[in-house]
Amino acid sequence: MDDNHNTIERYERGWLTFGLVMVVVFILLVGYTLVNQGGTVPIGVSRIDATKVRTQGEFANPRVEQVGNEYVVHMQAFAFGYLPSEVRVKKGTKVTFYITSPDVVHGFNVQNTNINVEVIPGEVAQVSTVFNRAGQYQVLCNEYCGIGHANMISKIVVEE
Ligand code: CUA
View 1 (spheres, rainbow, N blue to C red):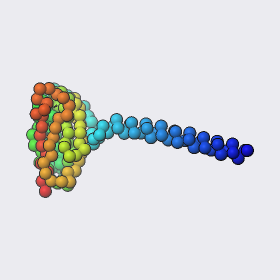
View 2: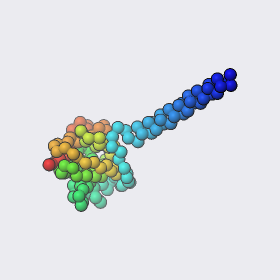
View 3: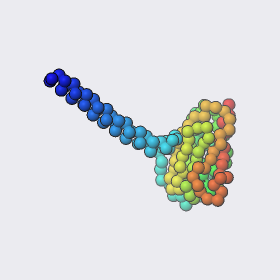
View 4: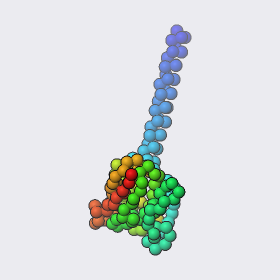
């Protein structure tokens, strides 16, 4: 009788624990999805004066630089294109993109990678990757930004 009662209690406690674990898992999943949004997480986002992007500072000179064994790209996503309009890097080398917008919100989506960044005027998005396959990677804007949105494309050329 008493044994039976204990068994039931243990059984209930088991389900209660299971329920709590599932709640925690659920919260973690939601959090993970919110943070990730299905792409590489942009990190180190900093503030910048959008009205000066074209004329002052690093982004006034959009470029690909080799820094040690890595590449650093300062990029403008603008209506309607990207500067530099083409990025050339070597395969297997880390590339860090710093991207900002001088006008409206744009996207920086690199096809066949998990890079999918929202580029917000007044903010610098940072994202790093290593291209392990040579070839051309198309860059697309996936935030509707106006009449030229569909033509806002660019490419990254990865060389052997
Ligand atoms: Cu830029 Cu859509």
